[in-house]
Figure: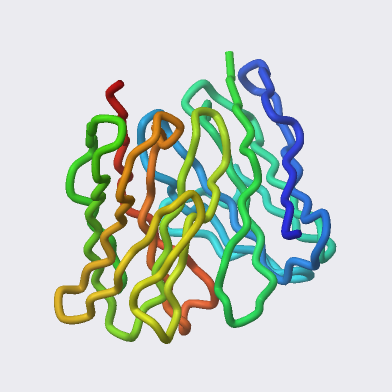
Length: 116
Length: 114
């Protein structure tokens, strides 16, 4: 149990376009979902925390108008990178939490975004 | 504020040798501690976690870690390394008050020599 999927697994887009990444909890309800960004050979940087039905909480330095996060249901969160630029190229990973006291996050397989 | 420090960005051991990956944390309240493993171009997989109770925690793939409050450490060990253990390992800390927010260390790349 506790499987999280991401779609697409990789995407290439042109500079100036927008791209949407989906994160789904397949076999549990996720009260909280998290979006991370990972640069090559670096750690995960938390971008934002989203709770179902409410606005996402962004970490300092993350542009909320550029990285739009929607958590419309207990099993789906989306990250939209708007007006993408080459510097947005990265590995984006989502995770989901049941909201129980285990405080465990279940991670998706990641999405490789390349902006040309 | 919570933080995690992983000593050694790269550790190399021989197959069959002891694996020791170091992790120290900083937290103003009793922490929840995690070790995750990441294989290339994949997400993270939980190896083990400490929340409360027994300070020696056993995880998957033969790994274990010991929570030492006096040393603010949570080092990861495995008695005998296997080639398949080669990966990136992340130590992480969370606090109950932060609603599941996890802070990751910088990661340690483990290489296994034949």
